Amino acid sequence: MAQAPKYSNEFLHLGVGANAFAMGNAVVAASDDVSSGYWNPAGLTGATEWLQVSAMHSEYFAGIAKYDYVGISHSLGKKGVLGFTFLRFGVDDIPNTTQLIDNDGRINYDNITTFTAGDYAFMGSYAKAMALPGLSLGGTVKVIHRRVGDFAKSWGFGLDAGLKYRPNSHWKFGLVARDATSTFNAWIFNLSQDMQQVFLSTGNEIPTNGLELSLPRFIAGVAYTHAIGSEEKGFNISAELDIDATTDGMRNTLIKSNTFSLDPHMGVQVSYKELVHVRGGVSSIQQFQSIDGTKEWGVQPNLGLGIGIKGFNLDYAFTRLGAAEAGYYTHVFSLKFKLTQPKKK
Image (tube, rainbow, N blue to C red; front, side, top):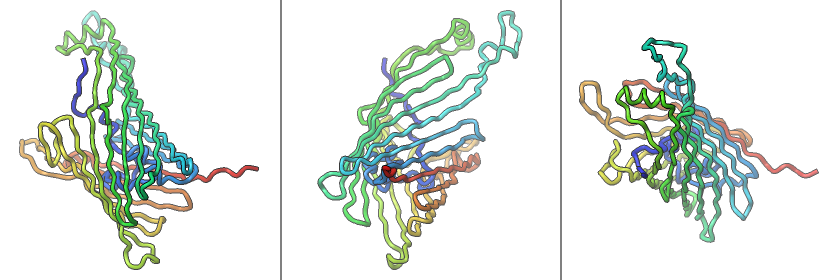
């Protein structure tokens, strides 16, 4: 039986690139580099270099969970741009205590083993500029693998589609349909008889093989860029507003219903040429519930800095996870390289 649970494959929506995190992940209209393979495949047409390579590593909850990203794009000239994206979100060295109590009813710590729960995504993208000036289209094919030790694994497949339109030097518009045809994960469970007995004796349901669906998510974005002072000085300010529309039921977002939820997020960037970028953004506008049951609205703040030197970019973001009183702050760094085609001897 197929099920469509809320937050299915949620690791695919964390984001990539410290520059995007600092902007509150509001980048689907402005994205025009190798990371567009993830954000908006249509934006890959802006990656005009022979090769772009990007990488990121971040850790969550004091290093318990690790999130890694690698992106590669290759320009084919007028034929378009190819992109490849790899994602991994994993928790390593999880204690397996299902055999802690032996057959004689004694606690035996030697029976504790460890396992890894990891989510992997392999994404291939292609984008091409259209005949209408400023318009580009792109698509992404996703292969997803999720594994929980030797107990469970799944393979999945999905499609993303995107468009980007830049009518002039100031405005950019983007639209992305993630999991456009619904993304599936086929789960297979391999539990030993002893583990099944532990599940039953502790009142837990034994999982069965099945199909998990991720319903479509639509993201629309608009970005505006304007020079500060004369253009010769090289200072610019840009801002973007994105709205995520999810279709898997009511979420804790600003606008919500039983059918869909709308989650706006925005970011601002001040740049000096391509050398320095200062960024800030807000995201996750939602209600937080305290221990005493009271609720209040809050947002996730994001700050960041970027430095670019001759085809090399280093980006940093400082962002918060969860409620303000929880204090879950994290540092994110990402690198990007722009490479020209090697000259033939």
